[in-house]
Image 1 (tube, one colour):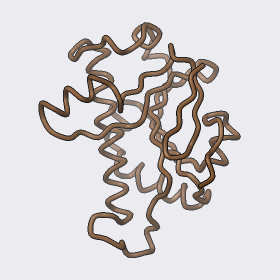
Image 2: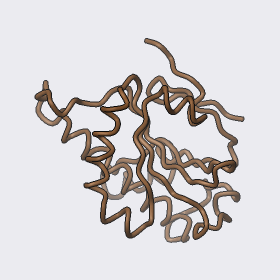
Image 3: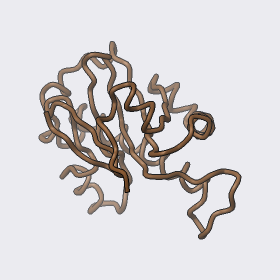
Length: 176
């Protein structure tokens, strides 16, 4: 088991079931070639649920009812960032799985999954957010990702740390 911390949220998973895409050489190489692409923290196959999760963790998220404190830092900017991370992560991951990009860092367990049979979910976990705020973010993201959700047959989820802990997706939080 490996334990990692992203945005003060603790995750624990089997290394053979995870690809840390954000810190991968593949991500770095593509960034160097074409400029910044944003990705989620990691891709994790949860065997007991038969689901491939593209996980992004955030310590906070802007409220749609509050004006941004700085240009480009409000709710719409947060939604756009998550949208880009989900789409670029799906593209980069499956480009490697399909051997269009180097797949050396992806473990054999992930390379041999029956992708037709498993669920695929893009999951945003926000520390300390309310359930209602998470639902509003999920509704906005779902509208933005509607075409991609249909093309890829993926689902979208937005959870706070409390619910993610109940579902066993996270292992705890760091209080700061």
